[in-house]
Amino acid sequence: MTSLMDHQARETVGYSFSESTAGVKQHGFYPYTDNGGSTLGITGSDFAILAGDTRSTSGYNINSRMVPKVFKIGGDDETGEGATIVLSVVGFAADGNALKERLDTVVKMYKYQHGKPMSVSACAQRLSTILYQKRFFPYYVHAILAGLDEEGKGALYSYDPVGSYEREQCRAAGAAASLIMPFLDNQVNFKNQYIPGSGEGHALAAKKPEPLPLETVKGLVRDAFTSAVERHIEVGDNLQMVIITKDGIEEVYHPLKKD
Amino acid sequence: MDHFPGTWGRPRNDVYGAYDPSYLQSTGPKTHTTSPAVTGTSVVGVKFNGGVVLATDNLASYGSLARFTDTKRLRVFGNQAVVGFGGDVSDMQYMDRLLESMDIRENYSSHGNMLNAKNLHTYLSKVFYKRRSEFNPLWNHVLVAGFDGEGKPFLSSADLLGTTFSAPHLATGFGAHLAVPILRRLFPEEKPIEEISREDAVDALKQCLKVLFYRDARSLDKYSIAVITKDGIDLKEDEQLEGQSWAFAERIKGYGAQAV
Image (cartoon, rainbow over all chains, first blue to last red):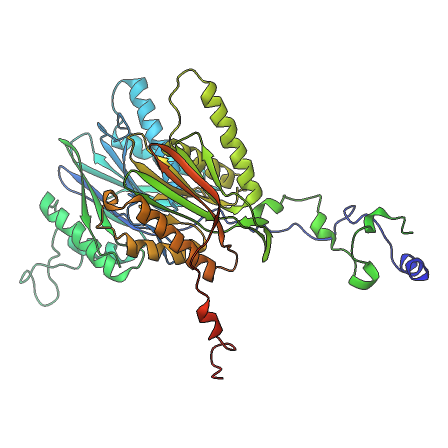
């Protein structure tokens, strides 16, 4: 009894929740993850190719060997039949899917309301707006949009997660972007390539970039990915290649190394 | 008599120190939903010719305490789909209630076509993604098993971030490390699922659960297993792992380096 009296005298007993001295607790929840993989797009004079590997990872685990990253946008049904625009997303797969679904809906709505398919340039601007709307809680993805422009030329737009975009001849994104992009600079835009015997010593004329034929580009895409697979653990399993021409969209899969 | 209710039922302050009031914070953002409390461990699943098998053990842990040993973590939806839950058990019960009410609503609706496993997976992943975007996640990793719209076997995963993926065999939690390699060896990618029999699939999952029981400290030898075929769902919820071999344990001395 005395001991109990003692302890009441020695301390102030209050309701512990009446006042809090601790500061605001930090959230322990991080809403993003990286699902690895890589994507790549190249355009030609009358076509565009978007490609991506089909591996999905979390850390050192392979979630699945068959998760496509390239999607047809604005098609008439679930298979994407009738679409003219293609989107690839790499980074956080859940955001990628949400982004894809949003853009798909927008492009469909455009067609229903205006009675004509959306142009790639309009779609590209809209995608930038969608990304920027989430400027302070971004879609953690690198998107690439491809199609054919009003003149029938291959069009490729690449984005950062918050919507900055640019039309380009070629772009690699995702885990192995740093491995693939220099290869593309050299093989598509002929960077550091000079015409032999065109000048004195090192003052040689640079080789001018020109649109490449479809078969060459297909070869470049496959070479880029087989090389990336060798040096990046998050890339592999299968290569999904989507080829956009005036005749429609063709989708092909090639096996990649599964290690 | 202690007349201060605030101190009742708590360790004595003079002995254990004052209670840390930051645990009962009334200001600032809610944080208790951003970490799990009572949790279930792995879920494993395999597709076979004409269906899918899904299995979990019956344990709900409270940290390292094996708190509830008869928790049913496989939930049946309608008569063509099963959801296996890993992660927070209270969030599982909440989602089960969501699914239950949706099932009832669908049954009363006039159109009559029931939601299949693929539809259910889409719904669950959108619930997960919405909640993670509100910073109020449902702390689960689930496998959804059943059939898709074309009547083909369907097995897919969804987690607290809204990440989704599908494969012929899947496992969550510890199972992703221990069960998936076993399943990939037993059913290599070249082997089409049409060549996998129901018996082989069930045996493989039992083998996975056994390995998980050997090596996952938060697992149990009592398990549930559901076989989903066109004929319906065969759910067994009080199974016991058989053929365990702990003979190796007798030879373990000390921490490994000890010879005697």
